[in-house]
Length: 310
Ligand SMILES: NC(=[NH2+])NCCC[C@H](N)C(=O)O
Ligand SMILES: [Mn+2]
Ligand SMILES: [Mn+2]
Image (cartoon, rainbow, N blue to C red; front, side, top):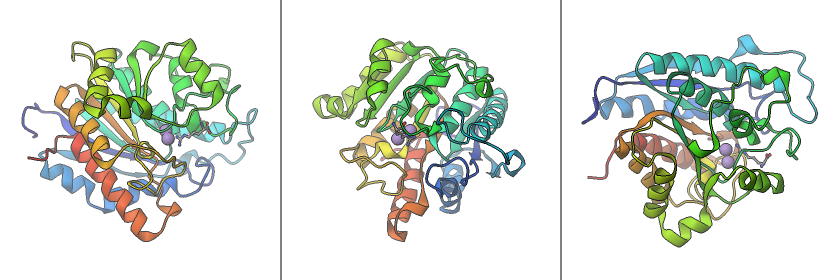
């Protein structure tokens, strides 16, 4: 076990939606396979975790033949079903006292992971590391990509689609904080303001430094450092020079160290109960870029699970 932890097991659960139907750009489903093949489970064992690896979830059984758009939302039934299955699996790992690590896959999966986490830890807070807010509703989304919407479902800001009725709005706006934002749609800006959601964009990272930003983020969602934390890390929060293989890269992102610092600081709280690493997409870059992104992904996860520099 990692120093200071009790009998928590790391449950490496890997979930991927059907690439053809869920990911706006095919290939995001292959990210987890690369992370696992790069040796992530073994690296976590080296850190002292007892890793229970669920295997690669391809969700063929959920392959829905007829999934026409709802409004402009793409593959809504498929995404909903996969996320619901993910919610159940994450919830049952958490119930067993394990720490679910979910490797994506696109960020719509966080609807599942966070629902699962909240089923076991109803008072958990969410720290969302991303270039994007992923808080569009069915009426604000321009792309129709559900990976740009999971937060609005989790907060109950989007509840007009019966296919997603299983997503119960168990998260409240005051238990959510963002770090790394820099590409926000107009409708999302309005939603963030109207709901008083705390967000540290790259502007604040530049202004205060990452140490202060993480401290302020924790002070907002977890002032006494006593609530369970779900960390949802979209690899596109990092600058594309650090993590190039991702579907929606945005320049001006977190440095390698800033990304790792966030993970280290959250681990240090002792409150982490569930972790996502999303949006590694090996099909979108040359082999060296893929290797680099996968290596960074593995090392972010290690940092969030206790690896230290000294
Ligand atoms: N998980 C992601 N990569 N999200 C990007 C979302 C981009 C854009 N805001 C959209 O809604 O389509
Ligand atoms: Mn995202
Ligand atoms: Mn993103």
